[in-house]
Length: 503
Image (cartoon, one colour):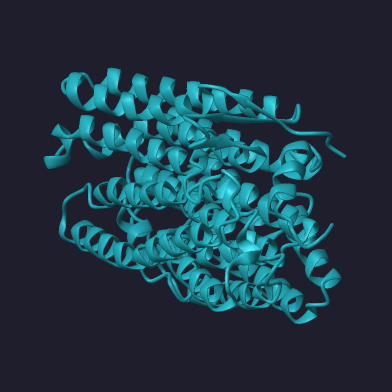
């Protein structure tokens, strides 16, 4: 059991999000004609952020909480976990982008806007990191909204009709949805301040609000929780608040699809968990509703994925389903549930980033992304084929890959809570995920090329800057399956931050 936690003032929480923001300014203002410099700045910045995040995680394992700016920024185990995930996936996405974007932007109007792409990429990552280190409930909303603005411009980056339509839908629906989160955050602040029991604390700081939340009237708490669920749940892609997600994931440049599904929706779920979980001790009945919402998202997402012919849309709907698992785990409020939910958050970030990179590799090599137009790629693209199946089986929870352990933990948590119906739905959704992912992979890599379709004459494996990030993610999926206790120290403490209904 961890001992007494000490609070320490550190510049690290500020550095992890200010570095990408500054890098974005430099890329946009000073490197417009030097594409190689744009790429190097992006990769080196995210490498530094990942290193700082790892160092913060190490410090926190020594029973330390890092704060700065009069506790406006605060990093505990949960924040550190998110920073490491965002930094690591961001680094691999930046490396992948350096080749993918170079090819896709070689011609056309986007060729002159690479500095804008890399600048927005840095700002997108910086705003996500800001949301994970802020301790201010209003600034949490502002950071989430900032990620919407930066990512919305990236979703529409190709500037064709489909991209503009997806970007407009993305910005419109998310701005409307996230406004509910603003109402919830303001109501949480006002109701905490009205308790007059903060004893010198601030009603703006989440770490202080959690100590007085039991004094908030039940009706006010119910409205606050509803607003937060709708607002942050919309950004997290939870059904039925998910309509923006398939179009945005499908039309965005593939490196941005990696970040949207790999980390952005998780950062939004982090915001939901960080705010709603503080209500659990006083109103444990909230957990039943959240678990029901999560199981609905699991089932609806994977059923929609079954009908898709577009690979990117298939993966997008799969994300809706997988976020249901994370929501169910965290929504239970127990230590085992929170551990399983956070473990699946980590595993899904790895698996889904890998799968989007694989689909991007297929698009790069063939120019197609519809399952009905593809086939027989396993001999020409053996690395991509192998990486895809690792990601697909891990996502479905196939042993001994990493997704098996996080899903098994969630099943056990549901069983221990007596929610056998939810465990049954979760298992059914996993079986359907296996069917969806393996069927698509078989048709693309092992199936015959459709009649009337011709393979590109020079079809071959993608360049190393694209397949190396894929291989790294695939290797991590395998290693975490063989050695699932590797992330235990950080996940254990992060689960302890959220678990309020007993171990």
